[in-house]
Image (cartoon, rainbow, N blue to C red):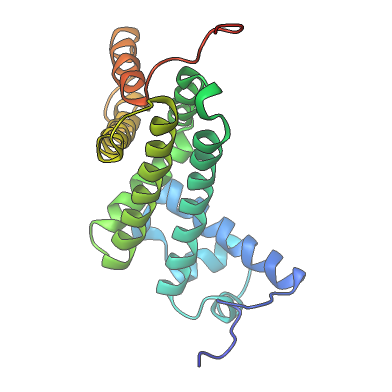
Length: 209
């Protein structure tokens, strides 16, 4: 049986939760601005304005800190996807869903953060496992959205569409954010047409039979 510890509390106190959140805030700032190589325990403690021992009370090792940070970043992003994909069903216009998801590419800090997460996943199997689980869940939400709009579509085909959608969206983030390229009207129009085709038909007109 694993003993209770602040890095994995079963019932954290409000103050403990607040302190843990502040430490993760500092770690996220470092990861997004300086990269994973600079995400040391000492750097996080300094950025949070606490002693190293305080940080180690909540996260005994760097691996514990990274696991908690990845969980927070990926869970927050997945919650946004889930809310979009599950809320509207057949009444939700795919264009509105797409606009919201593409809007994330306009947040340079978010794109940089995910770029660093991908880089960590390339060298750390634990990080890679978390990222694979995130994208599997992401594709699952999109597949359910597609099935809700395309009646009679085979579930396997819907999931394949969803996986391609996720691949294009994540690759596009690099080319639309300024990291590997810049967004342009012509390429954006082509990208939108492709992505909308994967999501399914547009929402019915108001008052349509």
